[in-house]
Image (cartoon, rainbow over all chains, first blue to last red; front, side):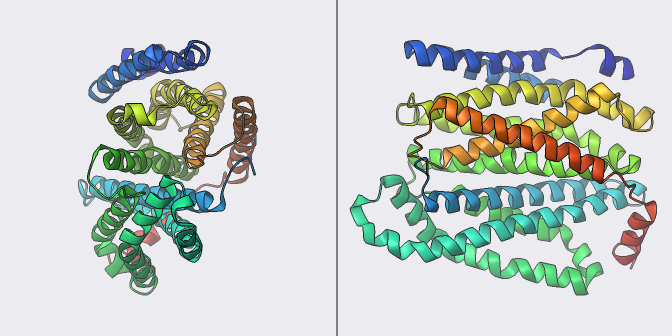
Length: 58
Length: 345
């Protein structure tokens, strides 16, 4: 357990949710400049996938 | 100021108080159940001790919600005079207030009785602690579920429910998490019992955000308006997700290993990361819930972000100062004394 805890910085589910967070930030810029919400939808979708992975894999 | 109305401040405080008391009741119940799985071991006593500490968080929430509710009661007649000039959200808030006031009044009436029994009959109170937390959770969940009443059970009403109820799982749970974290700082025993709960708490927080997003999708056309306030809130959501995974992932795993294998002390770098990430989490959830209640904010995106960043810096300084001030160990005798006055009496 110690090796797992101290060697791997992030698990896949955590990386997916972090990616969703970055997409949310990107979505703000896209919505502001272009008024398009597609990236926001993508971020929400990625968040849903990440959450399911996080709940069942950690 | 900045388009903020006094009634909105009161409604926010009601939401905050209900979220905190609901979350304290929820996690108090979880701790009691965890303790019950190890009835004759130390786990029972320690979980029990922690659960009782959450009573103060619960009553703190009740006081905040109760004072705000009484203040809204005082302004209700004035609002009613405004009639049709009141914006719909206000009217719906007030309809919900009229609908739920008997439940709220009953909640405020019975809650002090629990405190009274705890003071004069601690053993009896302890025997019914599970029931007490359950009743508190039901009241808080019921009251927070109807922040506004549209008159019918439609998608709009479901949005009101999801938009408010998730605060027990998000804002309230983050506050409880921070309290548990601060309590655990004083004892290795407590760390070994509290830290393993953190992954479960993280799942509940993510679940809370999911409930909110489901509500938004159901009324997407009405809910989504590309305003500076919306951009600001989505920015904070992005920060929350990135920060949350740092906290729930590597930091939590290292904390659990340190508590189980060593003396519970993290490497200095990870300790600072944990403290800062924890403070960002509670400040950000607080900010989102706060900003959400003000429909006529005149602040620009830069203005909102500057205030958020300033509050964040202050919160981090306060958190680190608190930690350095309250470093004293919780003697095992405290937990033993608690067991003698409640469990074994």
